[in-house]
Length: 95
Image 1 (cartoon, one colour):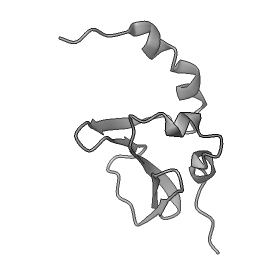
Image 2: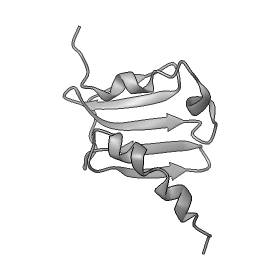
Image 3: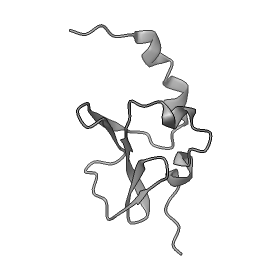
Image 4: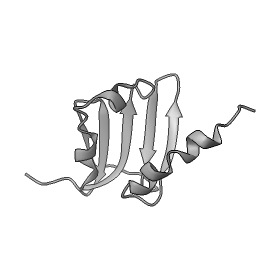
């Protein structure tokens, strides 16, 4: 069994509590380096948006139901001052 760094996991608590979703399911595809975050089960999407930061925001009837993070192991998202990831967490606006 792999060692678990409890302090590192616990350090995520403030960020997790600030997310506007009460439940999060996730999986990581190591071979593809893709992180899947789902906020609703089942996570059906009728629309998607690809950001400049290689984040796919999935919507169902305008509500965010999940996020797919491409190249997840890269620190570019965290280090990128121009990350537009937060913009997609609100319901999708109709144009």
